[in-house]
Length: 192
Image 1: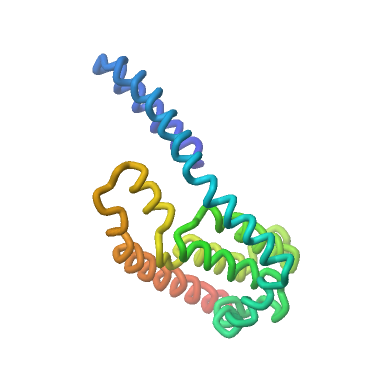
Image 2: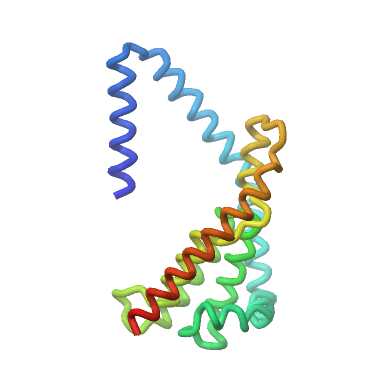
């Protein structure tokens, strides 16, 4: 669905540019945006590599299990259907930590592993479990304390004060997390 939507936007944009006779602007935009995209990826790759490596070290050393034990009281309230010793809890904790640091791209491997573990524990493989839905809500709306990726992008584009996004990001993500988790809780209560 998203691919169709983006395709529609691209076709509309190109058509409008042709209609107004601005083909030079279209060519310039295509060439400069491609360069900007490559530059952005090259700037963000070290952050993603760092966090992916730390995830592997934390997993191998047992740190993920230890961290999940610390956060277990909170996570057991959010994910009551998960077993106490579920590996998914460690990945969920890591995903939340990476998202809190604004490293959404680095949080993705943790999220995928968490979903994989929850799918293995899921009785009905064709339908997402309550824990999977709650995790998706939390992952999508999760609280961001330091929006590292946004700050890096603002720095890359020569923002005068790239850190000014921190307070609005905290407030916005707290509101979205409360709203999302509240709706998820209401949905679960209605199903039971």
